Image (cartoon, rainbow, N blue to C red; front, side, top):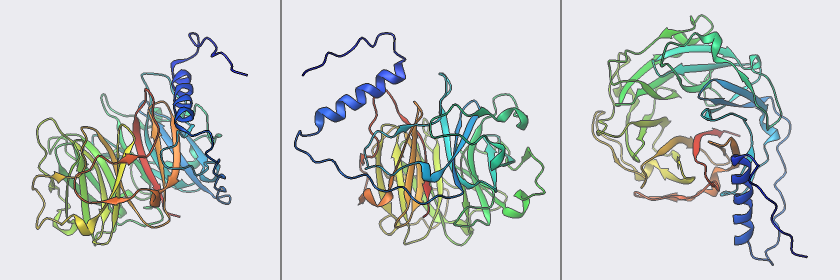
Length: 342
């Protein structure tokens, strides 16, 4: 029996967008295509997925509640926000640990993970930034596990929108950190737009919104700060991640296209401060993270949908590419990405 589509005129726009995305996927699936058995969820873990909106609404949920999907799936609704607010950051951290929040002014804050409300996968979260005393026009530029996460970390690297690189030793960011301490002068390259942890013995890989990037030895970046990437007018730095010659980096654009670039095929510059080389064909690259065999990727969208899938599902490519579909989107766009090192 063929059913009529009900009237959706009174339904919330984000729900309509989700229904339309479901219809589009069903329309593309052959009638005789067998359903793939779902991949079992991981055993219970104390690692939490933290999502944070632009206006400071945050939540945490144990990682094992997010089931793995196929690449290019639609994900599930996660952090609930009300426009014009929308999800802006993702992080993974131990529930008994701390988060390090870095603002676009280069100020650092420590926050206990368990100070955030633990909720199911889909929940509104709670406002958390009021206690941080952010300045006018100051926003969070990135959130990281305060202990460096499973990969460790000796330096916090901050990169400004104009490509200025600043390194901060982990000792300054420990329990003795005074919340709101500043580590960057906004006059040097503008506001901070990207942060990451490093071990200090590898390379830095910096990408811009327009899909250009540079790689150079981290030891060449002064702790006092210096130009790491010459950014063209109309562009800005989107992400920074620590790499080694054998590393792979996953990059994702606003329209859900992603690719993996092997550092073996992206030569390091002899020194920082040069212009970027083309990595992806895009005008809005959202993020870049270093991935290893067996890692999982978490991607969140403007409508609060989140997807988890194996990084190994994304083929490695050379040269500037458009990428493959990593998340199905309809009237929506990707806002953040993080990686789970399993």
